[in-house]
Length: 354
Ligand SMILES: Nc1ncnc2c1ncn2[C@@H]1O[C@H](COP(=O)(O)OP(=O)(O)OP(=O)(O)O)[C@@H](O)[C@H]1O
Ligand SMILES: [Mg+2]
Image (cartoon, rainbow, N blue to C red; front, side, top):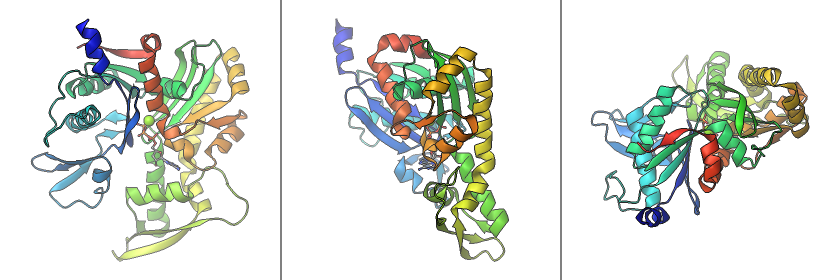
């Protein structure tokens, strides 16, 4: 009885703990948090100074005493303490308990948490995510694989015997999966995604123009003019990129065209498409027929890269669709699972009471 009443007050939450963005959805309330996965810390004391967009604004421009940390790299936790503090802050925030400036644990009831994790993570890495949630104030922490969450968030009929294919291109990982009867038949996780594309632009500008640019500038260029397929056969679009001239050390601006940026991104895009083709080659013939009929679904921020759907469709000869609002697909999938405990029992990888 008490347990039931207690659960009524608990705001169960779904979390997409992404390399680039962290989203938190509260059951019955929707997505309440959508922040960059960045934490600003005092270098010596490790005291947290800012979390999310406020911390992201500090990346590349922090004074010596402050460090802007991205606690996840390549889809996995690389800085556990910082990640835990960030999760604690977010879980606390959606519980709306006054924090009095500290990251103290919320009062009862504690939430049940469903988190999307990359399918390729090791047991140790899974444990790290689960422990971070539990010590951040969760009552129970269930992990579900990101491609499964993305497929559910895309409203694909995952429990049917027909095969569906989902490709989630995030910041740190690209997840490719074929799902049927509520399980992943084949999956592949590449530690190559949006961050890699930013790196491609950084190294292109360095080698081609001797221009040093930061991660944020590279990402802005990618979002502004990046593409995987010629978007228009008319006039090419350009962007003015500001950085530091490697030879003189002085500021310099370079005008770059979309075609050049497309060329810089091409090797990474090719690797992603090769991985999709490998998964298709391993897919049993019946499921492959279903996928050819239904198409491939794209989710994650990388799905927004101009012409990526067209390029994948051209190379695989299969229709490609971008999920609605691809940046929120995984967290919406986690939310869906919170509403359907039978589905949670089926798709969870691990989880439960400590
Ligand atoms: N319009 C756009 N064009 C191209 N890339 C974009 C666009 N919008 C966002 N991105 C990229 O999408 C990535 C972030 O996507 P997302 O939030 O799905 O990743 P994540 O879930 O944090 O990462 P992961 O799932 O790998 O842990 C970033 O690399 C970002 O630059
Ligand atoms: Mg993601």
